[in-house]
Every structure is written in structure tokens, then in C-alpha cells.
Image 1 (cartoon, one colour):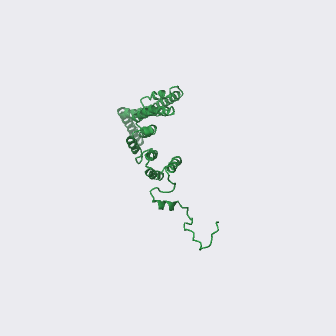
Image 2 (spheres, rainbow, N blue to C red):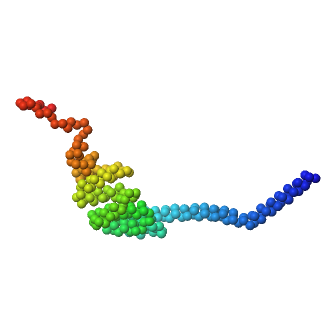
Image 3 (tube, rainbow, N blue to C red):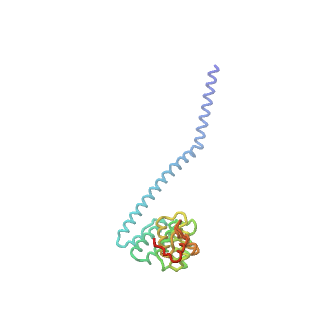
Length: 250
């Protein structure tokens, strides 16, 4: 009898528990369903968004190739539809500027580079456009504006710092400030991350300015000459021969 009573109590308890669970589900179950719907919907949207970005990038790349093969490459590249992407618009202007430089139209190249600087949101892309603008204008650029642009581009941590410093050295050389240019070249070569190509260009510029690789241009001439003597070379003058004795040449 006791066993049957215990079984009856267990069944009643189980029914009560089940009823409570159903009641909780009816009251709060929609929250769980909503969470699941949000997760599934978010994953689906991310996939759709990524697929759309890939399609837009592919379409833009195809448009770039078509523009580069057209008769008026510069105009076609400048007119590319960036789809509301400012960095993509800046990249189109950079490509148009490159085509203009190849065609010898520096004025159009400068205009497209300025447009790229204005459009770019990515700081690396913007600095690239600014550096290319300085290179494209060359000696035609106002010296003060050129110096200001290169000073900004050569700040510590800037992505094109070393290239901007190189252009500073070139500007100093053009202004006939050879000593300052040589000192700056040495400073650049001491920086970390100098590529072999950049180091080669700096060395060639140094030689053009009359400097010697391996000799600090800030050294006094006597010290620099001593540093240039190969290690182990005999720097003592030869002893004078006794009077009346002729030294045979070696």
C-alpha cells in the first residue's frame, strides 16, 4: 500500500512539474525563439552582405580593366562608379593619376591626386595620394607647401615616413644644401625598415653629392679622412734615406 501511495505522489509531482514547465514555456518561450531567430537572421545577413561586397568588388574590378583598355583611360578611370565607397573612389583617382603621368599630363595627374586626397577615408590611402601628389608636381610645387606636406608625411609612425624623408633629402640636394642632404641621408639609412632599393637610391644620391658611403658627413675633414683609411694600413711616413743614398723603388 505504501508503495502504491509513493507512486501516486510521484506521478502527481511529475504532472505538476510538467504543467509548470509548459506554463513557463508559454510565458517565456517566445524569448528563446526570438534569440534563435536573431542568431539565424544575423548569420544570414552577414553572408548576404559579404556576398554583395564580393559582387561589387568584382564588378568594380571588371570596370577598372575595361577602363584601362579604353582609348581615354584617364577619363574612364576617373568616372568609375565607386558605389558610395569613398576609398574605392580615391583608388580610382589614383589609377587615373597614374595613367595621366604615363601620358605626360602632369596637370591632370595632380588634379586627380588632389581628388584622391579629398575622397580617401583610409589614412594609408590618403597618405599615399599625398605622397604621389608631391612626386607628380616635383619642382613645380611651391617649396613651402612641399616642405609642409613632406613634414606631415614623415612624422614618426607615418606609413610612408622613409619615402617622405627621401624626398626631403632630394629637395635639400636640389636647393644646393648638400651637407644637410648628406646628414639626412645618413639618418634615413640608420632607420629600421629601410629596403634594399631605398638604401641603393640613397647611396647613389650620396655619391652624387660628393659624399662617401661609410663616412659621416658631420665629421671634421681630418677625422673623416682618417676613417676612410683601410684598417691596418700603414699611416706612418717612410723614414728619410741617409744623405747620398738613393732608395730603390719597390
